[in-house]
Amino acid sequence: MADFRTFPFLPTAFHDDATLDLDGQAALAATVAAAGVDGLHVFGPTTGEVASLRVEEIGDVVAATRRGASGLPVGVGLGTSPKDALAVARRAAAAGVDHLVALVPAGTDPLGRLGDVAALGLPVWLHHHPGVSGARRSGEELAALAEELGAPAVIVEEAPPGDVLAAIADGRCDGLGGLAALFLPEEVEAGAGGTVAGCAVPERLAAVVARFRADDPGGAWDAFLEVLPWLRLEAGGPGLRVRKEAWRQRGVLSSARVREGAPLGTVTKIAVTRRLRQVGVDVAAPYPGS
Image (cartoon, rainbow, N blue to C red; front, side, top):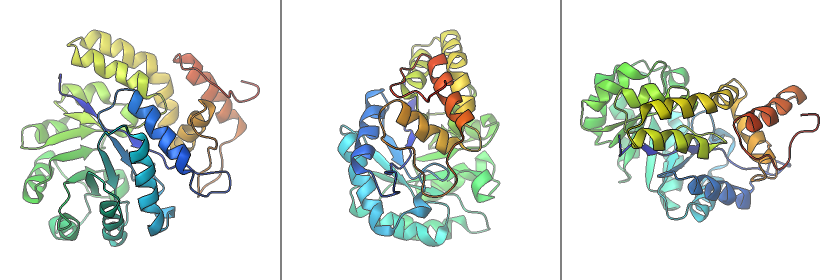
């Protein structure tokens, strides 16, 4: 368990007018890096808003993330559209990214559809997220696909993740969990090599992981249950907007703007403040009425 690693996905920072906030992106990366993670990701399939970005903005976000990452490796998700994945991958590679994360596609020839991305020469991590891709594959199938592609890791975002991750752990690559960390203890128990779960209280997740690393599963479960009220709120349908609002309330981002979709309502913004306080996180800009 000592080698369990954390590579959270970050949201993309915008100003109130929906233009990129590159200083905010760097500040966000620096804050998460300081929480004790092992690397960072941008452009998750549900958290990075990559589909709303122009191709020329991809490199800007990667560069800003690297600026704040304190030398940690940075990976880039390629979005949910296979036809756009290669363009994102090329722009990310030019910006100096360390590895690419490709969604495992549905269909009968996933290796062929990922071949052009792999040909760029960067390590490719596979991302199994059937709720997004519609691809339902067993752990054995994912491990075999990773071996054919030479992928060093497979991210599994399927509930419950245990059987799939256990099968991957028996292969030659790492299996990594996600799903907003809601199944983090079960992922550890299944032999996962880490997690990509992003959240707006990364220091609290780091405390859970530290207990597991110290071979203290009871203490890890206690720490997990303490942070669970926040994870529940952030994992809901408006999870990205909750996460951005939390980073705004914590004073890291100046805006909780998303490019597409309605803003959060007052009740949820108040809940963000209350749940952050409940898990012991300082709130620099609490929502009025909380």
